[in-house]
Amino acid sequence: MKVLSIVGARPQFIKAAVVSRQMRRAGVEELLVHSGQHYDANMSDVFFRELELPQPSYYLGIGSGRHGEQTGRILAGVEDVLLKEDPDIVVIYGDTNTTLAGALAPVKLHIPVAHVEAGLRSYNRQMPEEINRIVADHCSNLLFCPTETAVQNLKREGFQNIGPAGHSDAGNESWFPEQQRQTPLVVNVGDVMLDLAREVKVQLDREGQGKTQILGRYGLRPQEYVLTTIHRASNTDESENLRSILAALRQIARSGLKVLFPIHPRTRKALAEADLSALLDTRGIITSDPVSYVEMIALESEARLLLTDSGGVQKEAYFFKVPCVVAREETEWTELVEIGWNRLAGARTEAILAATEAILREDFAHKPRPDYYGTGHAAARIVNVLQWFVER
Ligand code: UD1
Ligand code: UDP
Image (cartoon, rainbow, N blue to C red; front, side, top):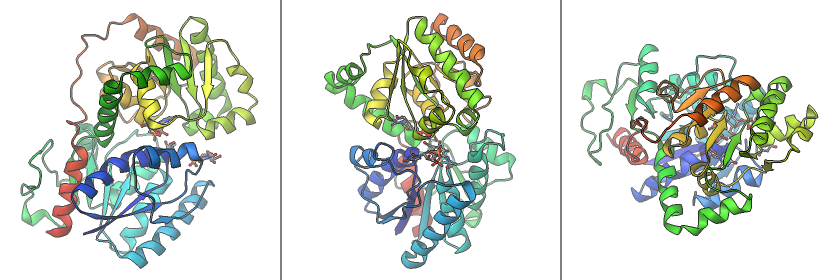
């Protein structure tokens, strides 16, 4: 079996690293295509090195651009690769423009598509990612959901062929009824991000000193800081939202907790354009370039709380039992808001501060933490189903 995996943005390198390693273990031939959507060393190369992702067989070098322009260039680039390589199946990840192009190119050539992180919905069509997810899901033959919420979302959109959740009988996916093989298959395999986050955290805990050193680089001590990441278009393109989030960060820093803010390049640019960078020049706020994955896991797991609009970071907070303020009006990871580990605050200063204060007052030590994201074996299940699908 020949798999062509398509990645291009930071969270995709992280997700693909786990699945790619599992493919190598299973002896599956994988070709990796990197669209070049993210290209800074700290948004791309660092993850290849740190997570031992194989070098891409194809680097399309697309770079930044308007949505249509960027997606179109990736689409054409991926199509060329598909025509040359003729893979058995294409694997795409998440909800970026690379995902969208990576879904469209193969489906038009009648090459099957597998979508990792299928079924997520914010129900906000202003969000570019929402359009990307919907299209990607409806182009896919295999829809690998990370949660039951995602499965239910897809059921509402008419998907009916649902495999069992949490199936762990490696190498035997015979549960799938013969007569339904032609229709798209939805399976809750769990979240590949849990597989990796758990593994890296165990390594960091084993090494002991590593975590202290990472925190030390930023002058931080466990439980005495808030870690924040902001990059959503709604929070960066609208300078009032960005200003309002920064005001909340300043207030938090004044109240005694330090704030560490690794700044996404999109946000760095927005700060400069709106002339807001000086607002971060505040005692208690530490800014940095984007950090590596291992650093991020260390920093997340020792934080007092996380404040983010990132999809991945919202879940990593939960993996590490750290409460999280979500600087968005809605989220795809609704189960975490329902259970009270995460709080939606949007971009308004007062709402962020109210959510932060509520979290700081609450005792999370005995709060229930259901296994919404599986058991840490999502990648193994994905590779099993891929093999079954291609070799059937
Ligand atoms: C993209 C995804 C988003 C995902 C995020 C992960 C889309 C529509 N958005 O958002 O879903 O959450 O990646 O981080 O696909 N830039 C650089 N260097 C880089 C990359 C980007 O300077 O290596 C700057 C450029 O000015 C660029 C801007 O960041 O225009 C935005 O990059 P882009 O890839 O379009 O979207 P992200 O905001 O990164
Ligand atoms: N991340 C990282 N370094 C950073 C910020 C984030 O390694 O400086 C990791 C984070 O731990 C998570 C992933 O990047 O695994 C999330 O990606 P991002 O926030 O860019 O995108 P999203 O999940 O919102 O699509």
